[in-house]
Amino acid sequence: MTQQRTVLFVCPHGAGKSRMAAAWFNGLRLPGWTASSAGVQPQAEVSTHAARLLTGTPVRALLDEAAPRPLTAVPAPELLVAIDCADRFTADVRWTLERQSFDEQMCTEIRDRVHDLAATLTPPS
Image (tube, rainbow, N blue to C red; front, side, top):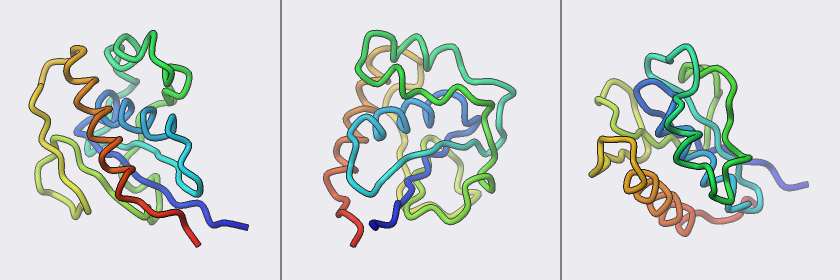
């Protein structure tokens, strides 16, 4: 049986950017990989922007709509990707998005970055 590896996407509130990134990643269905999301200071609920921007995409159904969780809620991810986060914790990859407003361009940028990241990952042995 292949071991499942986790990519943890983290954004300041764990409610929008990291949620979209995890949905795009999980939509790729990479063998042996899954994605989750967290926040540095989790918001009480998922951002309405995440659902709005993913509506009509093939990954809308993969959007995790559970309450945002803290970094510690996902133990030992294989890869930690910080999105627009201050350097308060160790991350394997840091993204600073060009777009800071929740619009289609931001969603496309996140999708493209997820695709680029996924292309660098190898299947677990």
